[in-house]
View 1: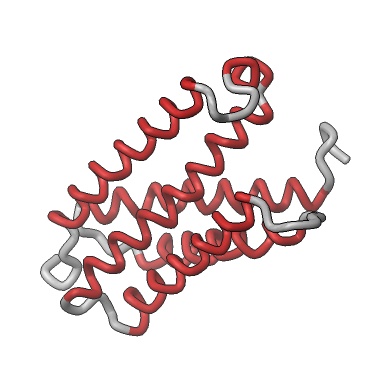
View 2: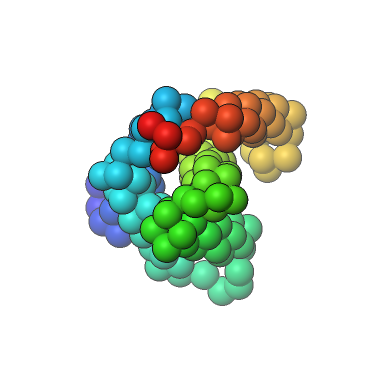
Length: 161
Protein backbone atom coordinates (compact mmCIF):
# COMPACT_ATOMS: atom_id res chain seq x y z
CA UNK A 1 0.00 0.00 0.00
CA UNK A 2 1.22 3.44 -0.94
CA UNK A 3 -0.06 6.30 1.23
CA UNK A 4 -2.81 4.01 2.52
CA UNK A 5 -4.13 3.28 -0.97
CA UNK A 6 -4.19 -0.24 -2.34
CA UNK A 7 -2.62 -1.00 -5.71
CA UNK A 8 -6.11 -1.37 -7.16
CA UNK A 9 -7.09 2.08 -5.89
CA UNK A 10 -3.99 3.63 -7.46
CA UNK A 11 -4.68 1.91 -10.78
CA UNK A 12 -8.26 3.20 -10.71
CA UNK A 13 -7.11 6.74 -9.85
CA UNK A 14 -4.43 6.77 -12.54
CA UNK A 15 -6.85 5.49 -15.17
CA UNK A 16 -9.41 8.13 -14.19
CA UNK A 17 -6.79 10.89 -14.38
CA UNK A 18 -5.75 9.65 -17.83
CA UNK A 19 -9.42 9.81 -18.80
CA UNK A 20 -9.76 13.37 -17.52
CA UNK A 21 -6.56 14.68 -19.11
CA UNK A 22 -7.23 12.98 -22.45
CA UNK A 23 -10.85 14.16 -22.30
CA UNK A 24 -9.73 17.75 -21.81
CA UNK A 25 -7.43 17.38 -24.82
CA UNK A 26 -10.32 15.95 -26.88
CA UNK A 27 -12.55 18.82 -25.73
CA UNK A 28 -9.89 21.33 -26.79
CA UNK A 29 -9.81 19.57 -30.16
CA UNK A 30 -13.58 19.88 -30.46
CA UNK A 31 -13.35 23.61 -29.82
CA UNK A 32 -10.96 23.91 -32.78
CA UNK A 33 -12.84 21.38 -34.96
CA UNK A 34 -10.03 18.86 -34.68
CA UNK A 35 -10.96 15.17 -34.40
CA UNK A 36 -7.87 14.05 -32.48
CA UNK A 37 -8.53 10.39 -33.25
CA UNK A 38 -5.76 8.98 -31.04
CA UNK A 39 -6.64 11.11 -28.03
CA UNK A 40 -10.30 10.23 -28.50
CA UNK A 41 -9.49 6.52 -28.36
CA UNK A 42 -7.47 7.04 -25.16
CA UNK A 43 -10.28 9.11 -23.63
CA UNK A 44 -12.96 6.53 -24.47
CA UNK A 45 -10.87 3.59 -23.24
CA UNK A 46 -9.76 5.28 -20.02
CA UNK A 47 -13.24 6.56 -19.24
CA UNK A 48 -14.74 3.11 -19.81
CA UNK A 49 -12.07 1.51 -17.61
CA UNK A 50 -12.70 4.11 -14.92
CA UNK A 51 -16.37 3.17 -14.84
CA UNK A 52 -15.66 -0.55 -14.92
CA UNK A 53 -12.95 -0.52 -12.25
CA UNK A 54 -15.22 1.56 -10.02
CA UNK A 55 -17.24 -1.61 -9.49
CA UNK A 56 -14.14 -3.46 -8.28
CA UNK A 57 -14.25 -1.90 -4.83
CA UNK A 58 -16.09 -3.83 -2.10
CA UNK A 59 -19.67 -2.73 -1.55
CA UNK A 60 -22.87 -4.08 -0.01
CA UNK A 61 -25.35 -1.91 -1.89
CA UNK A 62 -25.33 0.42 -4.85
CA UNK A 63 -23.93 3.78 -3.85
CA UNK A 64 -24.18 7.14 -5.64
CA UNK A 65 -20.70 6.44 -7.06
CA UNK A 66 -22.03 3.25 -8.66
CA UNK A 67 -24.99 5.08 -10.19
CA UNK A 68 -22.59 7.70 -11.53
CA UNK A 69 -20.54 4.88 -13.07
CA UNK A 70 -23.62 3.29 -14.63
CA UNK A 71 -24.73 6.62 -16.12
CA UNK A 72 -21.19 7.33 -17.32
CA UNK A 73 -20.93 3.97 -19.09
CA UNK A 74 -24.36 4.43 -20.72
CA UNK A 75 -23.40 7.92 -21.90
CA UNK A 76 -20.06 6.62 -23.14
CA UNK A 77 -21.85 3.91 -25.14
CA UNK A 78 -23.70 6.64 -27.05
CA UNK A 79 -20.38 8.48 -27.50
CA UNK A 80 -18.81 5.37 -29.03
CA UNK A 81 -21.80 4.70 -31.29
CA UNK A 82 -21.97 8.31 -32.46
CA UNK A 83 -18.22 8.54 -33.05
CA UNK A 84 -17.37 5.15 -34.50
CA UNK A 85 -20.56 3.47 -35.76
CA UNK A 86 -22.33 6.53 -37.14
CA UNK A 87 -19.14 8.53 -37.88
CA UNK A 88 -20.64 11.73 -36.47
CA UNK A 89 -22.90 12.16 -39.49
CA UNK A 90 -25.92 14.43 -39.16
CA UNK A 91 -27.38 14.52 -35.66
CA UNK A 92 -24.74 12.04 -34.50
CA UNK A 93 -22.18 14.86 -34.48
CA UNK A 94 -24.17 16.65 -31.80
CA UNK A 95 -24.78 13.38 -29.95
CA UNK A 96 -21.03 12.72 -29.96
CA UNK A 97 -20.13 16.19 -28.70
CA UNK A 98 -22.76 16.21 -25.96
CA UNK A 99 -22.17 12.68 -24.68
CA UNK A 100 -18.38 12.94 -24.79
CA UNK A 101 -18.54 16.16 -22.78
CA UNK A 102 -21.07 14.68 -20.34
CA UNK A 103 -18.79 11.66 -19.83
CA UNK A 104 -15.86 14.00 -19.17
CA UNK A 105 -17.95 16.14 -16.82
CA UNK A 106 -18.98 13.04 -14.85
CA UNK A 107 -15.30 12.18 -14.40
CA UNK A 108 -14.58 15.71 -13.19
CA UNK A 109 -17.68 15.63 -10.96
CA UNK A 110 -16.28 12.54 -9.23
CA UNK A 111 -12.83 14.14 -9.06
CA UNK A 112 -14.26 17.16 -7.24
CA UNK A 113 -16.19 14.88 -4.87
CA UNK A 114 -13.02 12.88 -4.16
CA UNK A 115 -11.01 16.07 -3.58
CA UNK A 116 -13.59 17.21 -1.02
CA UNK A 117 -13.47 13.75 0.54
CA UNK A 118 -9.68 13.26 0.65
CA UNK A 119 -8.19 16.74 1.21
CA UNK A 120 -8.58 17.67 4.89
CA UNK A 121 -9.07 21.41 4.27
CA UNK A 122 -11.84 20.76 1.73
CA UNK A 123 -13.37 18.03 3.88
CA UNK A 124 -13.56 20.53 6.77
CA UNK A 125 -15.51 22.92 4.51
CA UNK A 126 -17.99 20.25 3.40
CA UNK A 127 -17.85 17.13 5.58
CA UNK A 128 -21.09 15.66 4.20
CA UNK A 129 -20.73 17.12 0.69
CA UNK A 130 -24.08 18.81 1.07
CA UNK A 131 -22.64 22.11 2.31
CA UNK A 132 -22.40 25.30 0.24
CA UNK A 133 -18.66 25.10 -0.68
CA UNK A 134 -19.14 21.67 -2.27
CA UNK A 135 -22.34 22.68 -4.03
CA UNK A 136 -20.77 25.91 -5.31
CA UNK A 137 -17.71 24.04 -6.60
CA UNK A 138 -19.85 21.46 -8.40
CA UNK A 139 -22.16 24.16 -9.80
CA UNK A 140 -19.16 26.11 -11.11
CA UNK A 141 -17.77 23.01 -12.80
CA UNK A 142 -21.17 22.29 -14.35
CA UNK A 143 -21.53 25.85 -15.65
CA UNK A 144 -18.07 25.70 -17.23
CA UNK A 145 -18.87 22.38 -18.91
CA UNK A 146 -22.22 23.63 -20.22
CA UNK A 147 -20.50 26.68 -21.73
CA UNK A 148 -17.80 24.49 -23.28
CA UNK A 149 -20.43 22.11 -24.65
CA UNK A 150 -22.29 24.99 -26.32
CA UNK A 151 -19.03 26.25 -27.84
CA UNK A 152 -18.07 22.76 -29.00
CA UNK A 153 -21.50 22.17 -30.55
CA UNK A 154 -21.09 25.38 -32.53
CA UNK A 155 -17.47 24.85 -33.49
CA UNK A 156 -16.95 21.12 -33.99
CA UNK A 157 -17.55 20.23 -37.64
CA UNK A 158 -15.05 17.47 -38.37
CA UNK A 159 -16.25 16.79 -41.93
CA UNK A 160 -15.61 20.42 -42.87
CA UNK A 161 -12.26 20.60 -41.10
